[in-house]
Image 1: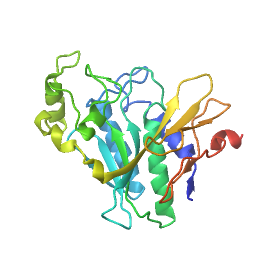
Image 2: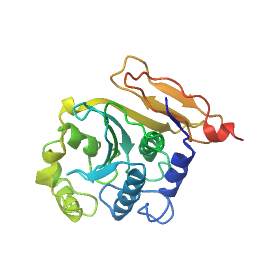
Image 3: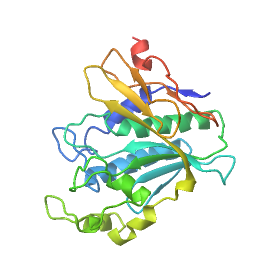
Image 4: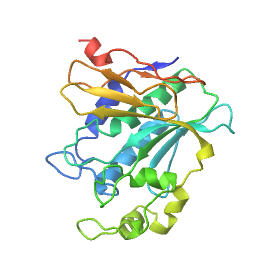
Length: 247
């Protein structure tokens, strides 16, 4: 096992909660395909590259970093979450799952290790319905399940998804190109910060037999250790928060 501290992941989430990564000056709001979203994917993409990943944006402007494995034909393990944010959702809501994935890969790169499969870290552009009147548009594009008429949806200012995508070098009629074959993905992992009196990190492994694992800190902190899965992964608790444990 390779373990990576979540301290840097937490610090990066806090960095992304401020300008220029927020569309409002007095809080956090980051809509899909906005100026703050552009700044965010540029910054996160640079962190992915520093961790040894090749980085690209798909037709839905989801951000994808890939760390190759030793078997090029093996389906990938996908780690990720969303990069958009509703108003004042909190610094960790969404980006934490992406930052922890980057830390997993960075730990492997630091030890010169490759898994038998590729690891992809994905920052989905829309989950929250932060800008347009629908949710999960980023992941639905990857799954190939976008709703009919998605291209014609407009935000509060009348800007359609097609027009917004064109500002990023894509277009709505190319969204089908973001769809992935199920055979190309072995499993998915998502870490999510839960808003509660105590901060939690919930690691969800949808297709594995084990139940999701919740690691809870007694302080207001979301810097959890990360465990990189082995070739035959199983979900397991990683113990106390690394920042809280050091206090």
